[in-house]
Image: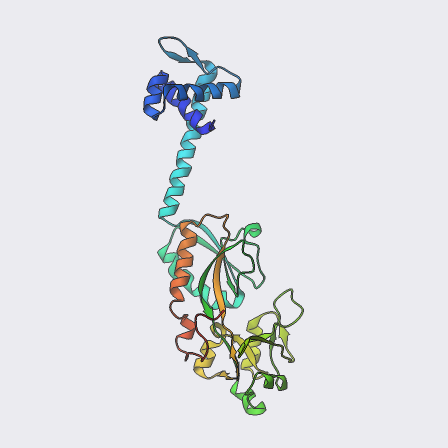
Length: 315
């Protein structure tokens, strides 16, 4: 039988002085209350109540056990009350893991306002570009780009990351501008290889018959996109990066978009959390904030013209 229910039945019986009165208070049958108390006595191996035709009297062991049960039941009530309050008012520690460049540029600026909205939440923001294990490492939320790598995680799509091919005006003046994806082979392309991956990621385009993975060559290969961004601004080569990283530079002319015969694929942005973690109000509050921030167009794209062939359905 459920031990907590048995404890409650025993304490109520001890207070009421009879099984019938305890049954009335608990909305149980007297026989069920009796079974709960007997189950406790059997489990403990001691008699908790002296029974007579007139009344019930606690044994010495029963009196001590009743006091301990009161403490346990009070603590359970407090835990449940706290959990109910958590559903109503977000509170506690919220651990968020995001890619470095995106976190610095677009998550960190949201945190002061989030703190004003939810003062009872403490945020721990982890910045790294590797795929973290949310369960093993204890993260509440991760923000990731691309299709979720694991179907074991719950994913909420927040928006899309538009990709662009671009370069500094100085580079284009010195080397000319490619007109087709094939022309990229004649240029110095700045390449990205995520941590733990030895080879550069191909540049993904939407071709006439589906997606195309274009492998490029160049004299720089790094794991952090911000290094590529710096090199492109200095005129070292052609860059293939999301607009959240280069949008301001495009708007101000520090970088120039290169329009080719195929359109760069957009990448979906997801918030991920483990199904083993209840979607508490603190998790929901932050995911909702991110979704609202990126709706209907992410802020880093609002000052840029819409690229032909790219829309929110891209994936």
